[in-house]
Amino acid sequence: MPDGTVLVSEEILDTTRLAPCLDLVWEDMIEHEDMVAGLDVTWYQYYSSDYILLLVICTRIGCVLIRFGGFIFGHLPQSLQRFLNNKNISFVGVHIKEDVNRSIRNNLPLEIRNAVDVGELAADVLHQPHFRGLGLGRLATVVLEFPLRSRSSRMAQFYYTGFPWLEMNEIESLTTDAYAAYKLGKKLLGF
Image 1 (cartoon, helix red, strand yellow):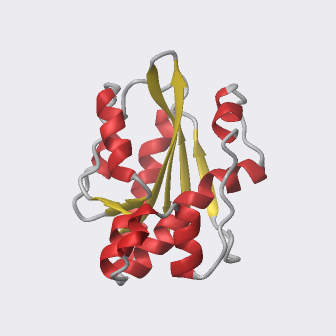
Image 2 (cartoon, rainbow, N blue to C red):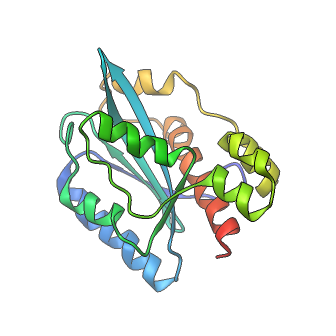
């Protein structure tokens, strides 16, 4: 990661591995009293509809990359719905509330009980209203004092081509935003 942290990333391709992975993340959150999770959503537009291709959740122990192509296109597995609706977890991301509204408009029930927009949080906690308009990279640079390189806008297009695996540099690119949101959330929420 940009700050030198090495994280374990788990790529979930099917629902059989999702529940055990989320259970492990939840157990670690309880054990370490770390109830913050960074969240990033990768969208793909197909004709007039938007689809979630990838949901990345980043915590203290690492990142979970949940691929939506094929196996859960159009609905969320029950284990993921339970995790996202856990009132004890603060899911922090940039424009996270917009992602929720966008999913509702596209008939995908992405419900997040405790969604926290990192820009709004930074503006409120640091008393800097202009932080609401900053992107994740700029917020990470200003608040965390480490530069964050934005991921390529072509990543979603590449991802959609259906490659069954992701290379290490692609995984790092996809997890960087969720990791930065996690670090910002931890700092700003006082954990």
